[in-house]
Amino acid sequence: MPFTIKPVTPTFACELIGADLRVESTPQMAEATMQAMDAYGVSVFRDQQIGDEQQIAFSRLFGPLESSPHFGRGSQEVVRMKYPELFDVSNLDENNQILEDSDRRRAYRNANLMWHTDSSFQPGGAGYSILSARVIPGAGADTEFADMRAAYDALPSDMKRRIEGLVVEHSAFYSRKLVGFEFTEEELQRRRPTKQFLVQTHPRSGRKSLFLASHASHVVGMPVEEGRALLKELTEFATQPQFVYQHKWRVGDLLLWDNRCTMHRATPFDDFSERRDLRRTTVVGDLPLVEMAEA
View 1 (spheres, helix red, strand yellow):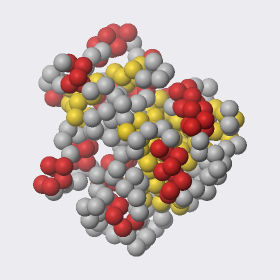
View 2 (spheres, rainbow, N blue to C red; view 1 turned 120 degrees about the horizontal axis):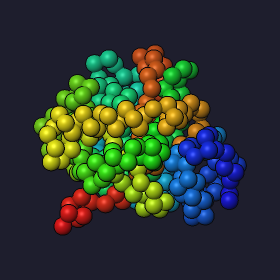
View 3 (tube, helix red, strand yellow; view 1 turned 90 degrees about the vertical axis):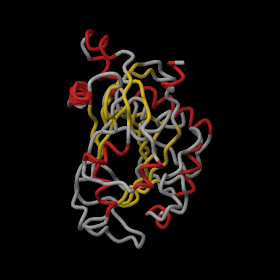
View 4 (cartoon, one colour; view 1 turned 180 degrees about the horizontal axis):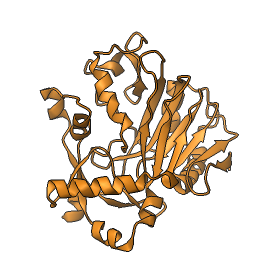
């Protein structure tokens, strides 16, 4: 192993100690990292003073990367982020100043305070998300992670039988609507809802997990309110304290999580007076396509 694994809990989240990713971004490092991720779901490399290009190069070791859906369309990423592979996770504008209260990007990012899975509204979902901490507020702004494998394992047998094979529609519009964000007509045309299985099997570990998110709008084939009640019940079950790890950020953290078996959410901070600058790369997902499974 090119690093030492320090578990945060016996089965969920770990620190990977002793690696310098500026010089050790190799296929061997990637394979060792994937083995740690198979076991723990969330991993952090501390004290990584890497730049944008190095983060992208390291992330590509795990597969093709998503491009920001806003890149090249006049939004923040065009001017703050040099590369389309970088998603801007900050409260800063194009001049690196804290966003004004009236800036619609504030409302859009408020959805990150809800439990979610990155890109669950995309066919195939997302694989790893890789988040680099550049500027951290003095207090708050933690990220919480839920172990959806352990949550599934702990479900009663009758609930496991009930949800096996269920399909859920995921939409970015649904989650943003919950926090009062309004999309333009062009934005509505750009992203269509997608369907995902509620129970997923991890392609590497073979473990089953719940696949939930604030983007999950309804259960296909079930009355809307009944389906939403089921999704709410499962989300509340999966985010009990025994399934959750709360990451307290330090500058230089490079944090990876596996969207195929975790959920996460941001916690609040004083984002009108303190700056936060994190940058995310996201590996394209490989979840089974519902349409292919039903064919």
